[in-house]
Length: 368
Image: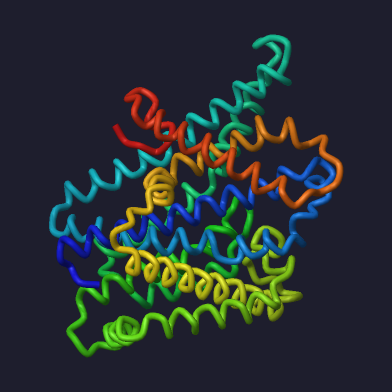
C-alpha cells in the first residue's frame, strides 16, 4: 500500500467496514450460543451449528490481522523517540486494562448483590481477592490478546531489532506452553497479528521488485482473481470444519500422546482462518472500490466503535437477552437474526453514547 494521505484515509474506511462486518458476526455468533434456550447452551449444541462454525472459522483472525496491520503505522510514528514510545504503550495499557478492570468490578459487585454473603463480614477476603484477580486476567479476553500482541511487537521492534530467529524460537516454544487462562487462544491469534505487522513493515521498506511487493502488485492487477482463489480455498477447507477445529475445545499445546493430531488441527485452524480472513478482506476491498461514492454508514459506525460494541454486547446478551431466551423450547430459524439485530443496535447506540461522556468513555475503550 502506498503512503499518500488519501490512500491512508481510504484504507481506514475499508478497515472500518471490515471491522463492522466482523463485530456483527461476533454478536451473531454469541446469539447462536446464548439465544437458543438453556438446553441448547448447557448441552453445547452450538459447536455443531454450521453457521456458528462458519463465523468462528475466521472472525477473530480477521480482527487480529487488522490490528497488527495498523499497529505498524502507530509504531512507525514513534521511531527514534523513546519517551513517545513509552507514553504510547502506557496509553494503550490504560485504554485496554481500565475497561477490563471496571467491568470486572461491575460483575463482582453484581454477583455480590445477587448471590453474595449476607454481610461484608462474611466475606473470605483472601478467596475473594484470588477470585477477582483470576477473573480480571481472563475477562474480555480479546482485549488481553491485542495488548499482549502489541507488547510483543513493541519490544521486538524497538528493543530487539525485529529479531526473526527469536520470533521463530518463541513460536516453537508456544506449542509446549499450557493453554490455561486463555493462553491457548492468545497463542492461536498471535501469528495473525505479528504476521500482519511485519508484512506491512516489509511493504513499507522493500524496494520495488521485492517478493512481498511483487505479490502485492500481482494482487492489484487481478484482485477479482485473488478473491475467487481465496474463496475457493476457504470453501474447500470449510468442508472439513467440525468441533475439533475450535480452539476452545482442542487447545493449542502439543501433548505427548497425540502431538501429531494436534499439529494437524493447529495448522488447519490457522490456514482456514487466514484464507477466510483474506477472502472477506478482499471482498470488502472490492465492494468499497466498486461503490466509491457510498459511505457504508452502518458498517463504518460499527467499525469505529467495535471495541465498545464488543465489550457491551456480551453483557447485554448474558444479563438481559438470556433472561428472555433461556426458557425457549425448540429452535426457530428467525430467532437468532432478530436477537442479533436488537443486540447490535442497542450495543452500538450505547457505545456511542458512553463514548461521549468523559467520565464513562474508558468503559468502552476510549482514552480520555
